[in-house]
Image (cartoon, rainbow, N blue to C red; front, side, top):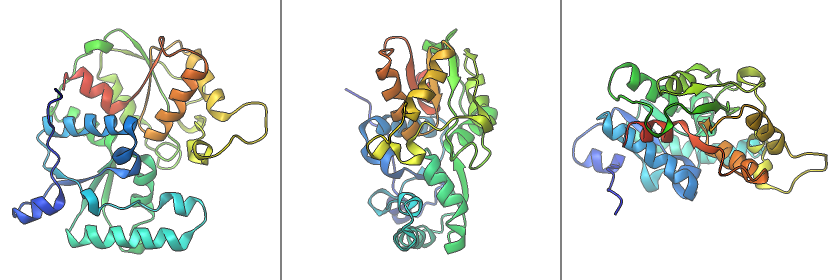
Amino acid sequence: MENKIKVPTMAEMTASGETPDVLFWVGCAGSFDDRAKKITKAFVKILNKADIKFAVLGTEEACSGDPAKRAGNEFLFQMQAMMNIQVMNGYNVTRVVTTCPHCFNTLKNEYPKLGGKYEVLHHTELINNLLEAGKITVEGGEFKGKKITYHDPCYLGRGNDVYEAPREVLGKIDTALVEMARSRRNSLCCGAGGAQMFKEAEKGDKEIFVERTEDVLKTNANVVATGCAFCNTMLTDGVKRFNKEDEIEVLDVAELIANAADL
């Protein structure tokens, strides 16, 4: 039986007179998608291992509004954002961490204009801080000696210049990090950020997730790591497209660390 993990809500902590150090913004994918929920659990295990005082909003967390804004529905975005801001400000939230680069970008760059001013971290940044501070320690574990390549999520990399934190985290595992020909600012989108995950393919010779997967496969890596549930889905589909499921794993940085730390 799987060990239960502790995930307190803001309402529970407030009722007990406690204040968390950080709000874990789970996001829609991390809450409802079966694959992404594994990433959420891995990150929670890391937070618990590091003894971080955190809480989630639970049923009080609504969509960040990112899909509405990208689709051009500013009215819906502002409605969703204002509801979330009202809830978070009501709890006096000052610091937020999320595993979703889309939520990260929206909360960090678009909520302040609507009154939601918080320090917002991506989970790879917080994990890197915890490793640097010695709050958690890792060894190679099942990944020792394996070759890993890292895919930059657009809203984390090009959108917010977060390139080094995930690489520094991966560098602490006893593995070989190999870069794709297109990485960091020149990285290629997996397609999810352009909504290709949610609709039929457009006319053309090749879908973008196929081309990005070709970049991955050229590295001959055993694992492709990313820090976004949507990139994870697109690359997983790409690996299946080439029938390479037995040769390469698609994992989130949090999953790699949780596994390496035997959590």
